[in-house]
Image (cartoon, rainbow, N blue to C red; front, side, top):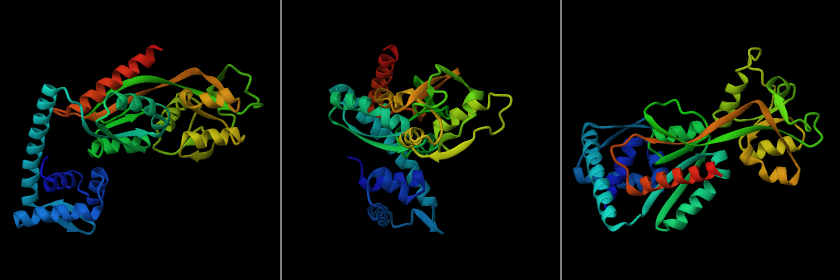
Length: 301
């Protein structure tokens, strides 16, 4: 409904990147450039300075951005008001999730949400926790779901549920018959870990640093980019690891991995993270409420 040229300009100005704006708007970069040029032709002035592959707002561009911010805020308030009157829940949302959550938690939650609200279109971006927090900070996504604490105090963080992490070893491993394993025992073996920036890795590193004798004490054998790769390496006998208990249910049923509780236990939060805003479109509010209720229900179970 709002002027497409102004929408595209506002996104580019907010992200200061034609590439990121194209990704956010699900458009090609030439299409984004074309829309911005059309707006520049309408105002008969440049809105961006383009130098050395970087862009910045001109004085006119800053003024247009200031007014467009107000326009889209009013537009959102108007849409919310009308949708509250009609009871309609529709629109589009972009959600970002860290790998573990995207693979093992979100499919069921989003499936139930879409079943209830079929007119809502949801786009999902997957990255590690650092990447998701960065997307929220840059307004590239509407809502992030992460698996590690968030340090940015300017963002709203709502804990969804607690996640239990366990050690995993292949059957036949010397520790496979143990019910619990201490940190010192864990560190006797080559360790398979996630990549830098992963929430899982960050939480495990903090846990290991609680040991007074631990100075970068992980004997890292491999760094891998997904839970599936980590599980495969442990199954192949290349080391042991610590993973979310939620990610290994299939392997436990098949008997290809053995889970051992950590001593002391290790838990982490799964959390929603989003910008502080004076208002949010109704579909965003509805998703947050639905997700909170979903997490509460599954926490009780």
